[in-house]
Amino acid sequence: MNYQYFILAKALHILAIVFWIGGVAFVTTVLLPALRRDQDESQRLAQFERLEGQFSFQAKFATLLAGATGFYMLHMTNAWPRLFEPSQWWLHLMIFIWAIFTLVLFVLEPLFLHRWFHAQAVKNSQRTFKLLQGMHIILLSLSLTAVFAGMIGAHGYQF
Image 1 (cartoon, rainbow, N blue to C red):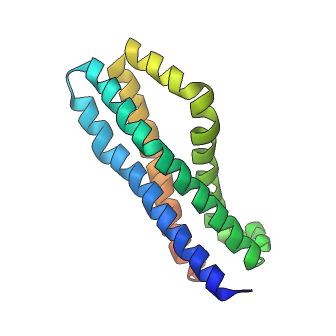
Image 2: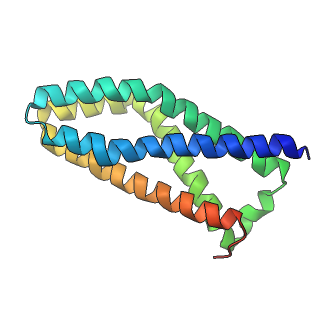
C-alpha cells in the first residue's frame, strides 16, 4: 500500500467531512432559524432557494469526495471485513449518513423533493420550514454522532 496516497486520501476525507457537515450545521443552527424568524414568508422561500442553490454544488462535491476517499481507504487497507464486526458500527453509521445525503442530493432533490418543498412552502411556509429544520436536526445529530464515533473508533477505541 502506498502510505502517501492513503494519508492524502484521509486528509481529503476529513476536509470533505468538515466542509459538508459544517455546512449542514450552519444551515441547521443558523440559516433555518433565521429564515423561520423572518416575518415575510414570500421572501423566506426565495432567500432559502437562493442560498441553498449556492451551497448545493459545494455539498455535492464534498459528499462525492467523502464517498470516494472513504471507499479508497476501505479498499487500500482491505478493511471490508471490519464491516461485519459489531464493534465497528460507526463505519455503518458513516456509510448510512453518506448514503442518505447522496440519495437526497443526487436523486430525490432533482427528481421531486425540490418541487415538493417549494409547493409546500407556498401553501404553509411556517410548517414547511419547521419540518425542514426538524429533518436537518435529525441529520445533523446523526452526522455528528458518526463524526465523533468515527474519530475515536478509527483511533482504536472499541465500543
